Image (tube, rainbow, N blue to C red; front, top):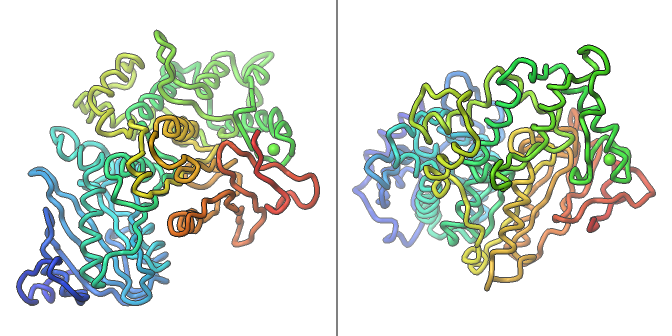
Length: 507
Ligand SMILES: [Ca+2]
C-alpha cells in the first residue's frame, strides 16, 4: 500500500530539524523530520490527484476521486501520558488558497473526518482533522481514562490546530493567512469550545447544530426516550410519525403567512396533539391518550421538576419525520446512553430505566459539565481577537433540539462585554425544515464558508444566506436564511421557490 511505502521513504531523509528554523518551504516527504511539541509525525506521502482511498475495508474512494494532488501528513499527539491523538493534515501541492480550515467531528468521534477534509482540500485549503484521541464510535474509551476524556472534550482539537498550523508553515514556508474551523454536531460543540477556551486559534468559526451543553443534551435524550419506552402503552409506532407530521403541518404551515410545506418559525406553532387523539380505539390515524402524553414530552423542554429550570429544549413541531432516529426504540439513543454508562457512572451495565432526570443531570454536571460542555458564554476574548462566529441550526433537527443554539447565542450576546458590538462578530442562522446538519424537507444546501470569509477578511457580515433545495441534481427551491431573530417573509408576488421574493424581517 502506498501509504506504508511512504513511511520507509521518509525515514531515509535527513536528521530532525525544527520548523522554527525553516525559512523556506519543505518538500512533502521532508516533513517527516519536523520536530513538534507533543507530536510524532508517523507518515508523510504525496497523494496523486484522484488517488486517495480512505482507510477501512468497507469504504471505497468514491467522493475522493475529484481531489487534487496533496501532501498527506499523519501524526500522533501525546499532550498527556495517556493521550493517543491521531491527526491528519492535508496540504494542496498546488493552488493553495493560503488558508487553513480545520474540520470537526460527529458523535463520540474516534474517526478522522475524511469527507469533510476532502471538501476543504478541494477548495484549496490546507486542512486537518483528528480522531479526538481514541478509536471507535462509542464512549467506552472514557472508562478509566480521564485524560482521554479531556482529549475528546477539547484538547485534541486545540493540539491538532497548533501542530497543523506548524506543519502548514513548514510545507509552504509561511503561516496560513487565515484559520477557520468548520464543524456541525460534535463539530459545532468543538467550535464553541475553541471560541471559549482557545480564542486565538481561529479567525472564523462555523458552529453548526452544536451538541452543547453535552451533558444536558444526553440527559434530555434519555428523559424523552424514557417517557416513551418505559411502558408499552406510551410507545408510538414509527408508522404514525408521518401522520403526526401531517397534522402539525395542517395546524401550522399557513400560520407563517405562506402555505409551502414548511414552518418558517416553529416558535409560533402551538400544536396540541390532543387534536389527533383517538375518539374510539387505537388506529393508524390517531394517537391513544398515552401516546398523546408521549408527544407532549417529546415536544417539550426537559425541566427540573423542583426548580422549573430548563435542562434542554425539546423537539420543534415539524420534526416528526425524523423522530425514528432517536425514538424508534426499544432503547434510547446509544450516544446518550454511553454518556451515563462510561462517563458519568463508569458502569457499562448501567440501565437507562433507572435514569432520574434531576439526580442524574446533577451527577453528569459534576462529572463533565465543565469539561464536555462549552458553558461559558463570554466569548469576548475571541471577539477581541477579531474572531467571527457563525452559528446555524436546522429547525427540524431530529438529533439536537434547535433552541439549544438560540440559547447559547442569546446568552453569549448578553454575557460578552467590553468586546466589539455583538452584531459585528456573532450571528445565528436558523434553517426552516432542515434536519440534523442537513436533510429534512427544507432548503438545506448552503455555503457557510463563503458567508464567513468576507466577514472575517473584509468585515462584511452575512445578512442573508441563500439556501437551495436540490433534488436529483436540480434546484427546486431557493430561500434566504436570515440572521436570527429575523425570519424570511414572502413579498406576496412571484415564485415562492425563488429567494428573491423573500425578505428577512423581524417577527
Ligand atoms: Ca409555511
